[in-house]
Length: 364
Image (cartoon, rainbow, N blue to C red; front, side, top):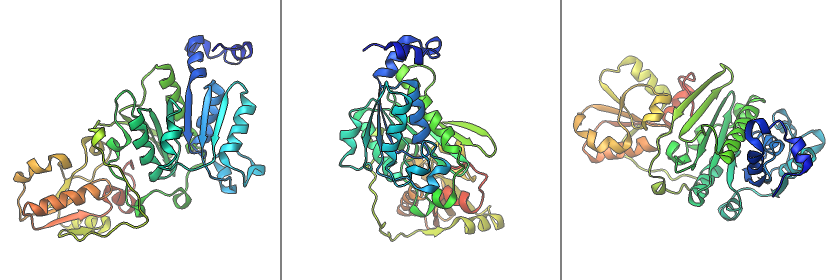
């Protein structure tokens, strides 16, 4: 495979930066973008302009008027058409030296492996947890780097998973939050330029992976707040990825009968304001999560709780929290089994606290 004369002229500004060899690597690369909305539009536009040779676009969604506020490859006349197909037309019109394959379908367990295995790198430009966990699971099994981004209002997060034996998505988020706390752009909104910033960073990380250059966001979570124009980076600790359970989503979640009590964030805030001396607040998240945000209390990661139980008084009032309430519920079960009698779980975890008590904390 050689660069044509027209390509040499087109990419000439690249050569002082990445060389002709680097441009050849881009031309030979195969990248799949799952999601053709706010994140996918800028990411794909820059990957195509940069000369990534083979692009795949997966999305069954159709363009609506409200998409035009942020999905910059579409215009008024595109309303009603498939997003992936329209993006293909725009990319080829911009750069005829690349190939683009369209999958007019949503990601499912039935099509994920067959689609992903044909590509070198996968971009997660989706907007739902079902797709994110499935992408992580399949990319982990197939050893494909996963360049992930998420957006909400003024905030965005970007990271690279499954890269050179680095952490996967479940190392950062062991379980999804409850549906009641899932960020929703339709209700909460999103600043129109935010996906442009995050999607461009996804394209940047993808190019760095292809070229094997620079410091890739593997084992790092980049958090952006465009309202305050703050960028923070946090370490992600790698877990035993092969031991992560498969996450299944159902229409309804069964209600479990527990011996511990539940408390919501508002009531906990009031309780702590009145009396925080007799209450033992325990954070069972991982250290990197604690570094991002916390509401105080004793820090005992869930995996270390068994050894730390001996240090706690069994008759003391204990309130446990995690990110979204799942791990803290497991911790409460363990404490009850060990003989503790005053155990309470923070419903919705620190995400609920951010939503209802203190939205100055960093959402992750």
